[in-house]
Image 1: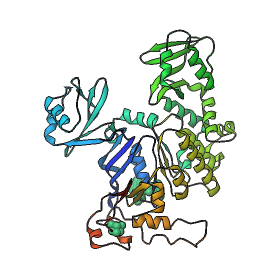
Image 2: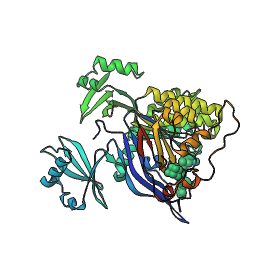
Image 3: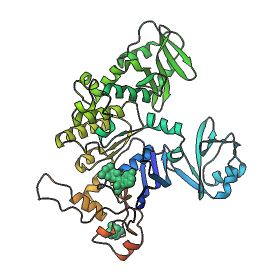
Image 4: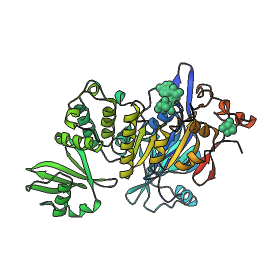
Length: 465
Ligand SMILES: Nc1ncnc2c1ncn2[C@@H]1O[C@H](COP(=O)(O)OP(=O)(O)OP(=O)(O)O)[C@@H](O)[C@H]1O
Ligand code: SF4
Ligand SMILES: [Mg+2]
């Protein structure tokens, strides 16, 4: 087991769509890992399954989508599998000694006070007041992992994942904003949703150490200082109360702010009625000029670049562990594309969250991300750090993709890669790229290549020597 838990680990994910021609098997044994604070890029030509992957993480696929198999671990990783025999030990209460011994054999000690309970479809082992391991029942037996598997989350957990942990900047801002409502109505809804109900919205986070100053009475001087710094000064008649792990700041007996423990400190929530101030703060963060006019506009009254900035501002409404930007500049003209990319690049550089950046703007990607995943035909064909993908591409598809990128320094039109993306209803056998690959051998047509390590952080799925 690695020392730190990844934010995301996708393992052998198989996803497809039911179509009138039959099952379209798009994602085939897809694997992807994102460490905490890491920024990765995902590239690949149109139709290779990038959006299907991103929407699988958020569980917002179209209704004809089928999650065939695999796992998407959030803040955790796969540990080991147990044979179906062990299903008999899935019982509420203290963990059975046989199961405990097996965990120990696999190098995962369970404390004496470990107990087992069921949440939705999965079993959870808790010890010392926190979740230690999760167990999913599969057709092959038991799958033991840390963190939660997005595919076995219940409805409440999924809502919480989208509200607090993973946000997505969409591929098409025009389709994402409702044309019938002004931006202020949509922004208010987003802020309300991100606050988790109760009429409060997320405002800002402060360090965990401020919890020490939560004493009933006047707010501690240090707490008042930090509120003032964040531009939410506390009136002199403010009082603080603590209740069930929350601190409530009251003004004239009304709950003005609520402070709760968050992932990276204490999260401060305020009245949704003050949404305008918060919306303007977010618009300023994404350099949207004239925020008051933007709030009072319908989406059609804004330019494409402005609409995209509104969507980016919405995705930043709460602190997230993971930001997914799915080709956020596809529908913008080139000058605005550069601005929006720069803006997202600045946001990524400033913040500590992990990010997945899907883009065809290969040059720009190189500046923002640590590693790049190259996808072809629903699978990952190469992974390496950003420099190596451009300087030492190994997979014939990656080489073709990089050669196809138009260069400003001249050299005529790029040749592209001959052929088309696979038909997912009847995909090619073996390596899905073989019908388009000049180096394909008999082996390539028969056997599917797995990702193999060829250098530091460099993996390639190809039979070629
Ligand atoms: N609801 C659906 N029903 C059937 N097929 C679908 C559906 N949604 C996507 N697909 C198919 O899945 C494949 C992958 O689509 P996806 O949108 O994931 O690709 P992409 O890599 O994001 O492409 P692009 O770069 O154009 O955005 C495509 O062949 C697409 O036609
Ligand atoms: S496995 Fe074979 S067909 Fe696939 S990319 Fe490599 S050489 Fe080409
Ligand atoms: Mg897409």
